[in-house]
Amino acid sequence: MVKYVLCLPCVLLLLLVVATNVDSKTLYYDDFDGTKGDWKSLEWPKLETIQVEKEVGNPKNTVLTFDTRNAGGALADALFIDGNEDMTDYTMKLRFRIIEETDKFAAAGIIVRAAGPKGYICAEAANKRNCCGQNPPHNIINVFEVPGWKIVADTKVGIPLDKWVDYAVTAKGKSITVHVNDKEVCGYNKALYLKGGFGIRIWKTKVLIDNVEIFDSEGSSLAVDAGGKLATVWSQIKFPERKR
Image (cartoon, rainbow, N blue to C red; front, top):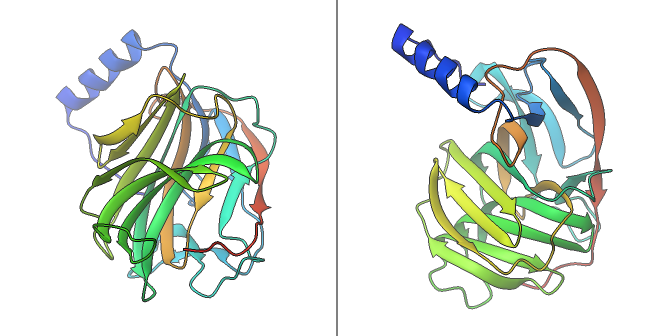
């Protein structure tokens, strides 16, 4: 988790934001360093492709390592939270760092509106995606609707290797919007799914994940909430080998 020192004017600004946005709420949060608050925490499964460990090059920080470079169709390359199928409007935000690639892929994705393992929306940010007649094949975001993997929105955005990227996807009504480093980069207004849970998808890449947060349509309350903890378990999405 990145830590900041706030000057007095910043603190006053933060208090002003809190006062004017009292309905904001962080629903889930995990920085993998044990930070507790008034949100539901995430309990990660023990799978071959996933491990909570010290960040490569920064042993003071703990992250989720998600490595699917050698994963086949029967192994986990996507995860979602159980019991959230009735969720509608929310944002999922995280930081990712692509540290290992394959010959065709270097990508990380956020899943929203997941009604189940075979129906969801995935916004995938790729440094490299050499497949499917993709043009351009590098530094692009594709928003897919599953099943079918129909591309419903895309844009060219720089996605660097071995650097942290702030990434967020917001689902609100029929609108899906994607943010990279706090800048809106693409979206669409005809979402196939109007409710469903959330998750992460990594395809043929090794990625570090940190500061995972899900907050409601009024915004994040991460800076002000503190309190209890309720664990939930991520589960595995399995589907046949995807042809790309």
